[in-house]
Image (cartoon, rainbow, N blue to C red):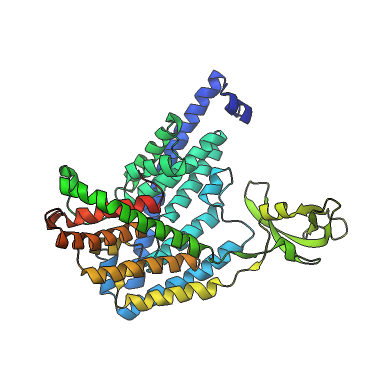
Length: 471
């Protein structure tokens, strides 16, 4: 079989035999990808449950029930332990010579290192299982996307098809762990592939999400993540539609503020190594530059600054030589500031994660004595809000604290997402506003048996803006 090249992709002129082979390879790769993504979901579900049982000492009920039945001091110890484990593991993983490649970078062709990717995902889930206040959706996305890239390489599909398989992994991973095949497929098409609605993208996206969900159906809950009535049995009433029109802009504004806040704290997030400014380097300094190795992985290579000079054209340049090369005969490389930025010049390891992350988790541990619903990815808080199990002022305080603790975890160096925290914040905001709406405008507001629906509507609007995915 002839491997399809870039010129063939641009012109779309494939020999008939190659078209058949390409279709057959893509079909097999898609099915295998779906099964593998489902097994990823099974693995993650068992890992999280096991860590929660070992850490908190109970094995029945949801995470909130497990945390509540645990001794308060043990609960605090679990959260603090999660911060210590996360800081040590991410410090080591992010500073190694092999880069942790993101899903976005893999979509552009970079290969995700299997061992490092799986370990990074496992650390995320372990820390969340011990009470970390951030989303756990990044872990299945990364492992399933890595698996998709590996399958694509094994079947020698075209670069465009490989990109689709990696994107399908991101959606299938979510579908597997949350048992949401429709959402997984839409996430792939809308969020990852930026509305690529061609059959070549839509069919694999649907197939992988459905197959992954079927594989995990014996392990992952299939009756819904949140305890509430099934509203799909009837059409929404006019008062619920009016509520959606009113709460949508407010929830969207809140989500936009939350999103900006997360972006702000990410600017202070500890890195694997400290960035080195081009203007501050001097002869004899040693830096790490990113390069592609022979296997397609992105690696850090250590270089020594041989000379700093200004050329005749007025452009500053540095001469570098890899420290692995012979000092006398190793070839020198000429680098401008643009080259320096492209290759992410780095210096010593960033030790600040050992300060910020344990501190952030210590604050969360102290709060967990009184407010255990702050722990975890936000599912516990969302259920409390949907069922209006707390007073409005109390929910307002939980809303603020959850946003702060999620931002603190991510800003201190945690590798996690904001999907489920956004659902929790939106549902809580909906409960707060809905309570006031029902109190002051009872004739226009939905009845009390619609409380959960009001929170779900607000959560959906909040999530759409926070994730930049309206569908």
